[in-house]
Length: 400
Ligand code: APR
Ligand code: PHB
Figure 1 (tube, rainbow, N blue to C red):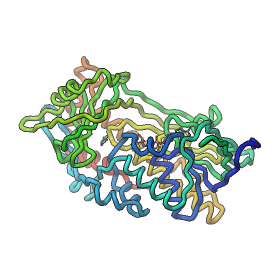
Figure 2: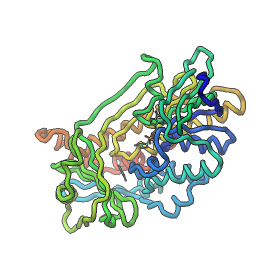
Figure 3: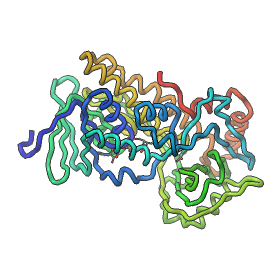
Figure 4: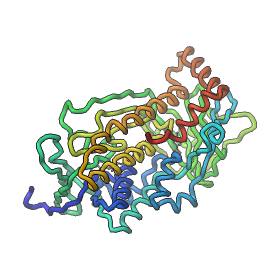
């Protein structure tokens, strides 16, 4: 231990205050397990960062059952279908009919984080913000060392001693790179495009999401509230928002989303950002006493709207495993953590890849691929079995 560090202790040390880290801390607290969260950014930054906004039924159920669903129930927009638009025609996928009455809820990730921060801090939860020089020690499986997280916050140095570390620090965090080289297998594929996302102060022009396949590239209409639209355009992978003045964005959205008799209403654009696209998984999601959850272990392209839901599904497996350990000293569920999560992760990877491959423009000159994509869309919108496959994955597969 560094003699200048203040030594603190918790049962579980959590790195990262995103959906995975905060939800884990909340679920553990409800079961009487103490955790400390170490976050590199400020609370304001975490709460304001514009990210995803679509919750599967299972995620909604967990938020409600764990006592933080009040605002979600009031403000969440429940949807029982999506629209696929191609060749100027619109086809609806009906979740009520095809997914056993389950639906999805539009509720911005920032609000999920605000609700979680409030719950944790009101319950006396310990969260260190603006943490710098975060390092992990004592995670190696066989050496019998005790894990610890070292960091600086507010001018002071800390050593957080704990029994387990949850690496919930996203794709660019320190947890995954702290694992010995060679201990993890990496599976990755990149896509030759990104998404330009905007927030516009205008009521959504459709009451349901529209996924559009178009010769100029993919477009998506979604929303954040009855007054706020969120729209995405396929763009170059290394594109810059400077290349996208408002007029160009609206022109492109108008062409790609066009449908006879339907009007896309424009409004002031209040936020713009570009998201790169990749599919990424590491196996296993555990190394000794370090458990990876959420984006630290896997990334999906946003076409299936799964990133946040997958992060929450991981901690729904991790929390009961830790509860079992503290109740009985048994590591049975902890040892199964990675395998259990990866079964779901790969199914969700498959779905996100499939939606992405069906809807985006890969090569402007590959006429065969475009015909194949249209055949796939025609099949999905004409076969009940194919539509059901989309619907049940979209609303969320059950935890197994
Ligand atoms: N030390 C401490 N915290 C860190 C570090 C670090 N070295 N590096 C990153 N973090 C923090 C980030 O600032 C962020 O707040 O970890 C958090 C990780 O949160 P997310 O990236 O949201 O990841 P996760 O909780 O796994 O949620 C994944 O949410 O943000 C979306 O697109 C994402 O949908 C996906 C889902
Ligand atoms: C969003 O609302 O931000 C959103 C919705 C559906 C997606 C991706 C993003 O597939």
